Length: 186
Image (tube, rainbow, N blue to C red; front, side, top):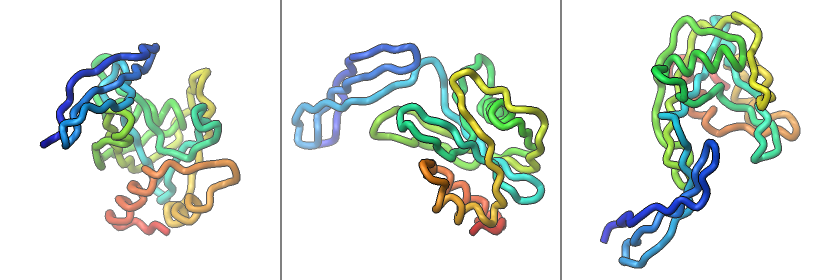
């Protein structure tokens, strides 16, 4: 027997998230419940991994309240502006969080990123020709620093991050992509 979804019960409805208990029947027909989270009022999450003409990759170091730590991660955001396409969101978030613009952008991959918890997917873009265009324009709730690392040293840096700093593992798929495209990544 295949798993069958029965119903969703909203147990918390906040400003940005809903906590849901999803009832289902397991493979043997037994009734089960799964706790999950749904985001409200947006389509997808997008991220961008930009590199400069000098083969430097740009990350953000962001304080994440749930982890109570700084995280080195891709520049990312929600597609929450009416009429805005994913690629526009990626460019906007890059400019807002780092002050950089890219001359070329390419879709890398789309897929779930925490499928046991949320029903959301993420699209990651690769950006090329990144140049500083302005100062970052951070929101009050954002504590973000720009990190620029030579691509050839990124793997070594990220596997030994600064003290009290974690690394978002999605970054490693991006390093693999740049390696496949012929960039030197170590």
